[in-house]
Image (cartoon, rainbow, N blue to C red):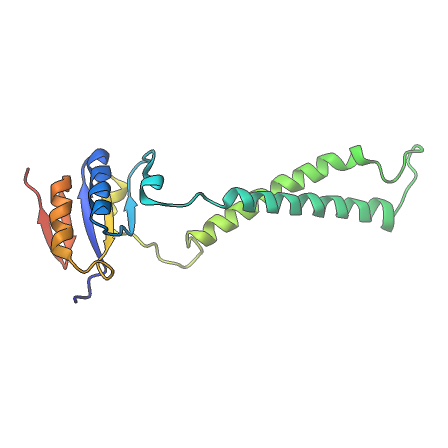
Length: 178
């Protein structure tokens, strides 16, 4: 087997790419990923992606911010330096609400950003993994793992049937002139 990692099928139209996904899945060929210049409704479900867990992480970070704000204010105003201001109690809940809210939003925002960057490998110093630069401009690209799919000729034929404009495999370019 060659050292080729991926077979790339380029499509000019998103409908052709969705048709290509269907054709490949009908033949039990696993798709590594799809790269598009714009969001396509329903592609996550078609590729079998699970729902993101980012909202759960945001909730956990938000609760952490609320607890941090509440415990910080309680420690400062009730335990460390209690003051009697105008006869009000030191533990007055309405006074805690704005700061707890702000820390909830702050922790949730920074936590979601950190989780997103970690999950997508966007940390500093890492080179971006780009299959083809045209995928961010005008092409819809399907990447098929060449190591797990043993019949590359079959994949090339299926991509051509689906309407691929160009197929890159083994340093060779298959161009469709239809």
